[in-house]
Amino acid sequence: MLSIGEFSKICRVSTKTLRYYDEIGLIHPDQIHPENGYRYYSIAQLKRMLLIQRLKSYYFSLDEIKEVLAWEADQAEEQLRFRLQSKRGEIEEKIRAYASVLEQMNSDIGSLEQGLSVMSFLDRIEVELVETRPQKLLSLRRNLNSEEYATGYGMYFAKLYERIATGKLTVQGTPMTIYHSPDYNPAGNDTEFAIPIKEGVKGTRNFPGGLCAKSVLTGAYQELTSVYARLREWVEREGYELTDAPYEIYLTDPFNTAEDAGLVTEVYFPVKKK
Image 1: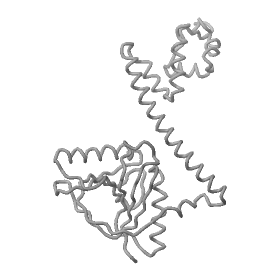
Image 2 (image 1 turned 90 degrees about the vertical axis):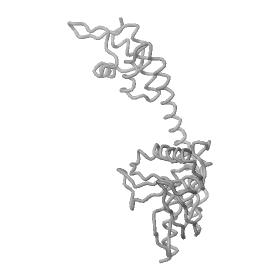
Image 3 (image 1 turned 120 degrees about the vertical axis):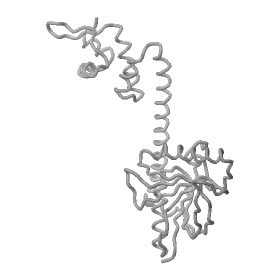
């Protein structure tokens, strides 16, 4: 048997943390002396504690670790493999996000070293006036909060493509998203997912063409906010006003694009002269 101090020293975890783990049912002392309350751990419990520490290093929450430790022996390895694969995906996504932030920071540092403003990149976002043609859209309209957008894009476009395949419809353009809410609300935004098609069937609508201020983003979707700001500034400065909801057209598939730098998105603001 190991005293709580010895166990703490070997595993490099504080005695305070061990007592907390006992409280939440993560790992209990093997014995507690009935007279003095001293806690003792068995040698066999070292492996359990090392697993807890290993899963913590993989950014598992304590609740997730507790669930892992509760699995039956015949299920444990297979279940843990699935959980590790899922956690690996989460970490890879965070790495990509950090890489994007680092790239942006390096660009800003480069601008400052050249004596330019950090926000000078806005001036490099090009805007043009275009006339768009009317289209027929197969669409789904949903109210999504900020956390639902990431999964929502893939899920709803997949449903539209499934409908297209089932109905043997003719695709006439790449996916697009139309943002109908007058302002941004983290609790939910009126969003329409659409794909241009040739046929008029149930679930389609006519999408009018017209004059638009257009900009193209090549890069990560996080930069779309800058594009929207630039477009809105341009519309005001050039004496136009918005006539309808802005929309985005995705020229590249994010699931088949290796890096964010390869993503291409067109942004349209329907406008008219004031």
